[in-house]
Image (cartoon, rainbow, N blue to C red; front, side, top):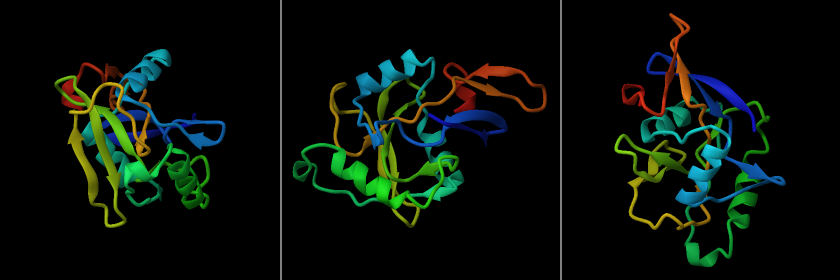
Length: 166
């Protein structure tokens, strides 16, 4: 997984350049599995506001079309479509737009957010009513380093508890 530095609210964040992949394909996550992965790698989940900023800052915007989830047996078809559309980007690009992000809000609730149309309009507002194990073809995991740096002082702040950074 590659990371890039991104300025947000005057602080420097390290964000994954793309959603989590395994064996060359995007992997879908439930809220539970996303939280476990973030904890395993000592990372955290983005806030909805950070997801919007990542999309606006992305050097490679990839757009896929929402589908009827019942028509997909797995996320493999969506992954293949997203990979084909992002083939013009290098691994160093910040890629966004092609998946809903699993996010955490200021109240500590985990939900879905993001996925953007070519116009930049967000498809998925914050939604936290699914079960913790719910997963569909369009949910992705983007990991965030849990500390943001103040570039003026060099001091680090824990993103996971400094809600003013959200």
